[in-house]
Image (cartoon, rainbow, N blue to C red; front, side, top):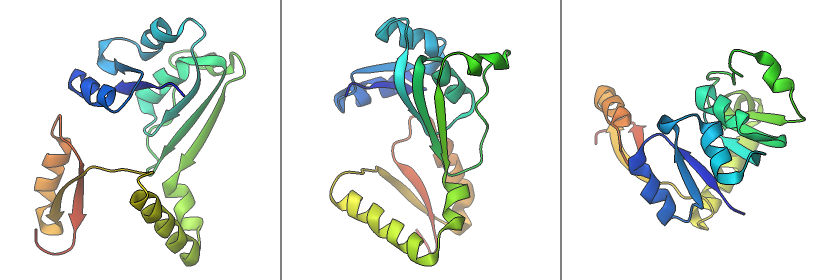
Length: 166
């Protein structure tokens, strides 16, 4: 499978290429759908995954092939996918958009199902299937510092809020 990745900052391109990305585009350097079509051709991409939605998700949706399929996932309710000024755009072709919001799905699980999900995720991380780059840990009384760190451009790793002192 070939990948075409979208980043917000030019500084992130080299890291993804080093990890094996086939192509990387920068969302701030022009409309995503136009950049995608320069790489894959006028038909667009067959599949897309977007963990954010909002404006970036909208542009990714526009980059889909007329028979394309897109998965949007996340943990918050977030911004819905918009289709620009003309909502008829979403009706063109036979595109499929699937949405998976953890914030909707997780509360509907039983305690046993939630525990099993956590165990499955930990097992995938131990096997190296899922990788994450941990960042700094902050105590709950240092939430201001944690937010400032999370908003810092070019930051590597996730910021964690944890009980206790760090």
